[in-house]
Length: 185
Image 1 (cartoon, rainbow, N blue to C red):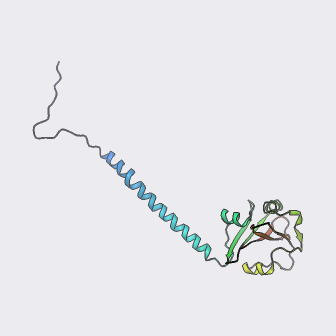
Image 2 (image 1 turned 180 degrees about the horizontal axis):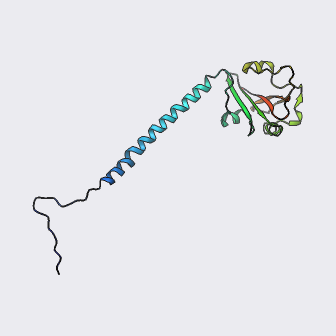
Image 3 (image 1 turned 135 degrees about the horizontal axis):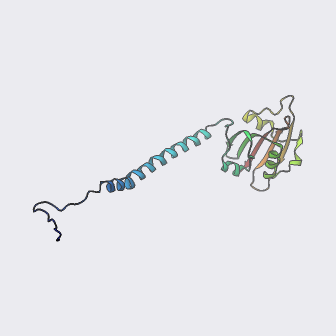
């Protein structure tokens, strides 16, 4: 038995299989994915600018956790598990001040003071902490009747920010911590 080979008819091109799916894959890989990445990147960048603009326009406490960068720069390590966290940053030519408030447990307070460079045993009732002027800046009432407050000041050497802390010790299980970190230029 002999095999017959069909020859192309004169005037017709040889048969080429069409690979449309391959062309579609190439288009997606070379055009659609980079375009989608650019759109997503632009959207995220736009949102980032809005967040920064909102934070810069703040005139009082912002009820959210401070960024890791702010916590590191001002050396205010808010302990994990804290609640009712708020912060505010005020800057001028001579001074930058960072205000933070949160509620925490006794162990959280001790961890906070140790990480901030203070001694938890130095926290004394009636001792100076956050000044009245600093408290007025963000609307804290640290002279409320029927409340007990303890304070401590952590003066750090060199260019490091100083820290003033006042703690509302009225509720023993959930302490209210008010901290002000100040950097002088």
